[in-house]
Every structure is written in structure tokens, then in C-alpha cells.
Image 1 (cartoon, one colour):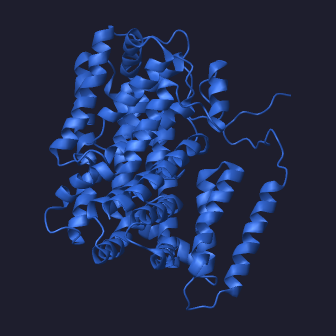
Image 2: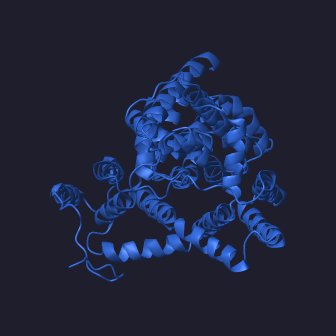
Length: 494
């Protein structure tokens, strides 16, 4: 008798569980309950505030499931905060997060970006661009270098960078046997780390305003930001590492070595990846130059419109979608119904990364209530000297951003604390701001549930944890070099 295949048919997993996940959950529950019972209500949580983020890290590494790890960490924190009504508190925080303007903006931008890229793919224009690049790019090294170069050119926003670069280059790198994990690493390394180095980006606009609001400078916040660019060491180091990896000087290390071995054997796309390989018969149906123009013109409109509307990616993607629909309908590349279906399909593919980012915001709110950021700063402040300040600011804020996945939100809290400390100690403000921005870009780069990391993995066609585990050794090397750099600059410039 054949197995039933109707949509509502019950099914059994191909492999039974081993019980390790259950033991892990019981261990997490026992830890949380024990800490909750020993904590005295009404007092600060202290080091206990770090526990939910540590639980997220342990569960994610053990299960390779990002969304579930975040949810377990958030619930663990809520049990500590509200043991009698953690379910009600979870509902309240979740509702508040979903009503937050930032989350609403993120859902619209990422969903519409997914729809925009889906239109490029369904019309065959992405494939045309890939075939055109194949004529120019003749080696594996050139495919990696061209991916990095395109990532540097799309500097206006890390979301745009993560999705557009991966969409443009993944078919090309597939042809040269580059693993999707390495593609995701290159794309992610040219997202936030590059955006901080260019004053015409969403990061520059946001942080310049934040610096000016918190009286970090008597002049314009953007001028202080520009002065700090030479000291944003992590961005420079990450860009240097990408070039070394692309050229082949930096060897494949850790999980990346296994991913590249799999790709060289003929499987660039990992198992369980949210993408499919192209068949041999997948060729552009339009003339090559027409397809390339139809790919590049919408991209140019997206970047130009975003810049025109004062670096607003939401307005830029709306204009780009309307332009693309009109362009493709005039040329009869696709029907109106096909383009609308592509937008909806693209929006649908972004649901998992959006869910991960939304739950990450819930965890951030819980960490704020536990006082994690304040604990980290208070614990390190007694050990500060003028020379050590930049390195300690980088390391402490890098840990906080990595633990929370909030590369922007954390600094709303930390900048009003760090700036007065730096001013009272007479530390060079551009150096301190460089340390803060370096920590922010490292957290965005290395955290496996940060928005840019999740979008880089989604766009490149691999799971978030597949990307996170292969990228982390390189990010850790970058962080170590950056910390040593700030230590040296602290003694040289103070």
C-alpha cells in the first residue's frame, strides 16, 4: 500500500529522536527554576541576567535551530522575571514588539525586498546576470573577489547588501564550486562591517543622530562620525579578512573547511537549505544584454530611490517594485499575475528570518528588564583607565550585542553611559566612538540571530546556523585583531 501524500496526512519522522533534546530541555528548566528560587525578589539580577543569552547560545549550538533557541532563551528569562505569570508577560512583550515601529518597518522592508528579488528571479533576469558574469569571471577566485567587490559597492544599507549581493552572485559561485556558506560569509562581511565605514549609509545617519543627541560632540554628529571612521577597526579588519579568504591566502578553517569540501565534490548547496540548484537546462530566455539591463536597472532604481528619500530603504523598495513591474510589463517578460505571485512568494520566503528577528527583539526586551547591559557596564567600569577604555568598550559592547542581536538598540542604552565616562576621563572621542561602532558591527556580523546574519543566510541559500557556525571562527579572529588594535591605540593616543 502506497504512503498517503495528501496535505493533511499524518506522517512519522524518518529518524526517531535520541532523547538528547529532552535532556537538554530538562537541564535548562532545572537551571532556570533553581536560579529563580534562589534569587531574592526586588534585587538586581546581576550575573544571572546573562543566563538567558547563554541558554540561547547553548541550545542553538546543540540543536542547530535558531528560532527555537531564541524562544527557549526568552521563556527562560521571563520565568526569572515573572515566575507566576510568565505566559501573560510573554504575550504582553510579544504584542508590544509586534506593534513597535522598528519591527513594522523591518517586516515591510524585508518582505518587499524578498518580493522584489523574487520578481528578478522569476523573470529570468537574475539568471541572465549570472550568465553574463560567467563570461567575465573565469576562475573561482575571481567569483569570490567579484562578490566581495559588489558587496562593497552596495554600501547604502546592510539589508540591501545582504539580499541583493547574494541574489546576484549565488548562481555564479555555484558554477565554480563555492559553498553557499562561504558565499554567506562574504556577503555578511561586506554588509554591516562595510556600512559603518561609509558616511552615506543608514548606519551613519542613525549613529550620527544618536551621538549628537547624547552630546558626544559640540559640532554636528556626522562630523564626529566621519572623524571616527579610521578607528572603526572591525570594519577594516573584516574587509581585510574577506580579501584574504577570497584570494586564498586565509585557509578554510573549522566548519567552513567541511562546507568547502562538500562544494568541491559537487554540492555547493547544503542539505536542508532554503534553495534549490539550477538544472543544466536553466538558461536565460532573453538576449543576454537585455536580461542584464533588466537586472541592473531595478537595482539602480532601488539604490537611487533609497538615497533620494534620505536613506529610507522602505520608500526605495516601494519605488523599485513599481518601476520593475512597469518595466517587465512593457517588455512582456511576465504577466501581471505572475509578478504579483512572485512578490507574495518572495514575502513568504522571508517569514522565517523575520520570525527570528522578531523573537530576537523579544529576547532583547527581556534582557533589558533583567538589566544585562547595565550589569556589563557596571562590572567593567571599576577596571577602566584611559588607555584601556577603547579596548574594554569594544569587548564589553561586542559581547552585549552578540548576546542580544541588537546592533542598534543596545547603543540607545550604552551611549548615554559610555560617552560621559569617556568625556570625564579625557579619552579621544573619535577613538571611543570607533570602538562602539566596531562592537556594533561585530555583533551584527557574528550573532547568529542578528538581522543581517539571518538575511545573509536566507539570501545565500543556507540555514542561519549553517552560516553562523562556518563564519564564527573568522569573526572571532577579526574580533581578536580588533581588540589588540584598540589596546595599542589606547596606549599610543592617550
